[in-house]
Image (cartoon, rainbow, N blue to C red; front, top):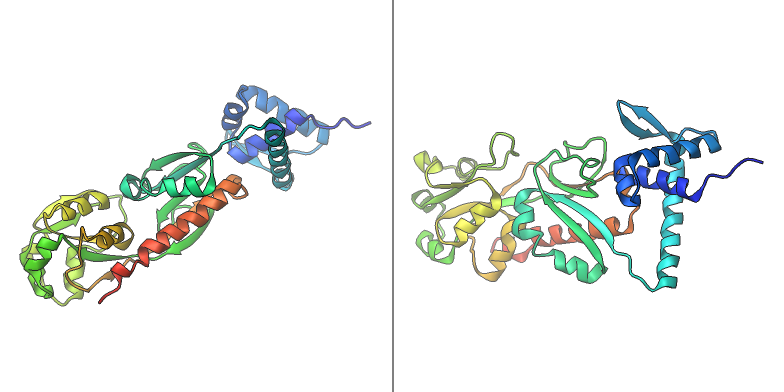
Length: 308
């Protein structure tokens, strides 16, 4: 009679495959990584099938492992659901969200409460960081990036294309009137993303699109190394900045900022969401993906960004 794999062994395999590493599975199961490895090796021997290949100290799922994973994940989720119903306890999901630093500081952080209210109990780890990120090392479940070239081996989808808009405090706008030519005489706020940052339109690009040569005005003025910081400087009345619609829409709707002129420049790339294979089937990840996509599209489509 063939011995059936133990429930503990199958649980170790499912956790390691879903989390992306034996170490992460060991932390989730409160055992050692060596114990996880031994449990999985026993399951492989009992089944007569390799579930992981050891490649350069990494464990990579085989075809057999990939075939088993979704069925086991569904089974353990159902077991967990039954246990919670019988025990009357609420199990909180954990979600690791990675976004660009400017989005973490003020845009997404002020909106997360809406997701928690709508979805229910969930522990969220919000990470503000530049590309590229390590999905497996940091157990990231979902990543928002500018452009889709960073993670070609993962499931990536384009969700929205943004633009940059000249924005300033209402007091500054009264000095401009509605003439584009007056912008060159006013203090400009520049955003410097550094040598590794994405290429966003600059004031020189904006003036070029308007058929004007800004001269030294295209270089003078305040400078910040994040979109959020540049936006705060503009709200403070220190000048005019080029801001992505996703960041400035709310301040425009609230009257903290105005668009002094209509000209905008579309960004060359789209914002994208990337979800690693181990997280694709998680209910909380799917719910957050839908919610975050809607929030991004709502900001970029704000009526305040439509020329009047």
